[in-house]
Image (cartoon, rainbow, N blue to C red):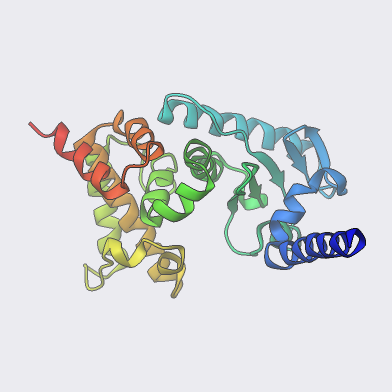
Length: 261
């Protein structure tokens, strides 16, 4: 009886590990990067063996700049993701599960998190963008971030520390700048996206490149508008209420209304 029990337990664990690797290979590779040929610059910073010491020094410098930006925006930094710097699209696709984009952030249900970068992603904007995703994940946890936070808010918040599209202006001006970007991308507003259309990962990233870019600009416009109305201190307050179990939409609207005269 005991042997049969152990057989099923071991079999179940083996099946779970195999399923885990098949369904989420990028998480597996990230988790075991310390046992790969990537070079460890420290316990949470790995670089491709194909990259040069010059690349290593520059990557560390830019990551430090991005960390300062997160510190300033959030009023502190709780996230401590493992940084994985890749050299070519093959490496990037292995750790990010996609060969598109300059960087990605990966969070796990057990709390480990990673920021994966390709060579194009070694700049402050890209890294700060991904670190902002990680900061929200760290403060809320995997379940709340993936199940309760609309994707437009997650991406819009990350755009507040990413100055590739609009400059680092006060929220009210950023709102106008993102509104202009939306108009440009949509040929004068011929196409618009409702927030409900881009609330999920699938809804946000499905479609041609132009639609995805419009989703980003729409998100940046909405979060800028909300910050202009609610104020920067509303971000940690929102997170606090969500951790306590309150509904995102209720708190989001309430914080905006409270700031109004």
